[in-house]
Image (cartoon, rainbow, N blue to C red; front, side, top):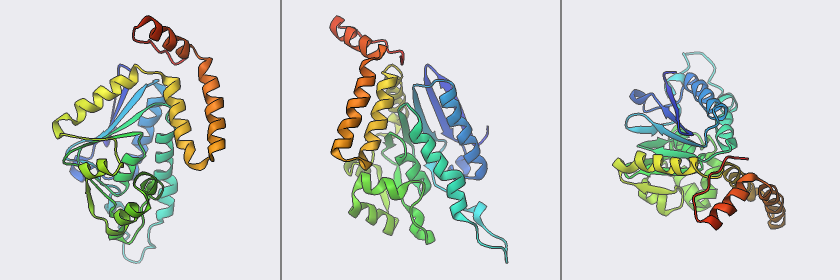
Length: 260
């Protein structure tokens, strides 16, 4: 694969968007390679995933060169693009039963910003910026942005970001609760790798259940969420990992989780 790089070692999958000359903007071919890479994450039994970009940007959204219609041709069907590429991408990332870390190394604009917000944990370099650039094209946020922004930042800030298209520095994104942490540029990948290594040694069943239940909470009532906690915790309590966790705690040693 050329526009997406994939590596796997010690239970950690690494996906790098690799069109640095185009600021890692999306093309149809890149979407296809990214889907293949995410399938490999599942097939190889990864226990953590790090997603980042090559060069000076994380991802600047759609490559508009693919959207230029020749004179007289009908306009592109953007809904088809979402249905074919962006919707499956976001759903595939959210469905991974393992922690997904976005290591945002530079500009994250348009669909690129919302790709980062689709991940479970976002680490951003101090020089990184998040930009909802859609309004500058007469569009609205997509790639899940209309879902993620109000939930992460609140409606007022979500509307401000979406309607102005202003640059949001990484430090401010952290203070607003949009991302997990802002770190110095030279610490971004070491921090991401250390976090991934920590997750790779953690409880796979517990992590998968944590993702599933926390993401379900937005659509559930309190009673529905309590029922979900009851059913999920009952299932986890019967696992070998829970038994191992309790034994390790009692024996004052690190647990060796197997995902069973």
